[in-house]
Amino acid sequence: MSLWSFPSPLLLASASTARRAMLMDAGIPVDIEPARIDERALDQSLRAAGAPPGKIALALARAKAAAVSAHHPGRLVLGADQLLDCDGTIFDKARDRSEAEQKLAALAGKTHRLTSAAVLVRDGHTVFESVSEASLTMRPLDSVAIALYADQAGAALTACAGCYEIEGRGAHLFNRIEGDHFTIRGLPLLDVLAGLRAEGWIRL
Image 1 (cartoon, rainbow, N blue to C red):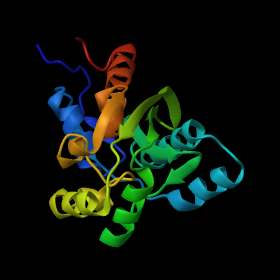
Image 2 (cartoon, rainbow, N blue to C red):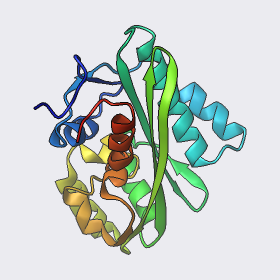
Image 3 (cartoon, helix red, strand yellow):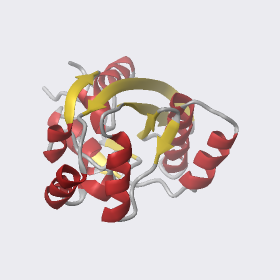
């Protein structure tokens, strides 16, 4: 018997390899179609209005899922987004190694929060949404340690808002983590699976 009950794979409105891997590791077949929306404009508008990270992440996830859903009638579409904030400042992805090292220096020795949102949409209608948070405390790091990490981190330096992937070299940066591992990687997977069960999309 198949784990899933729909005739077509879940449609992920994201190019994130981490999100795709999490879903596929859980036995969920996935098609990929990154949403073509102006994320930056929506993000900046919400920030200017003083929206909290959870509201911003959820709005971006909704917009991504809705944009892709418009082109795929009947398909179940998953949109997701993640934000990192530290001391009231939202951190964006670094543009290069130099900026990544500056961001790591700003996070070192502090606790920051990752907020991950997920939305399921079918035919333009939201059928499920979730927001999950995790807190991570980074070790105090001097410039030598940051440079050494940057030498090892590879693409993670500019692929993620915090300049790390917790499942890789980024694990060395922390001395305490509170929250769901999947949320830290960018998708509240357990909540998404619950949403898929509620939709009758998976049987288990």
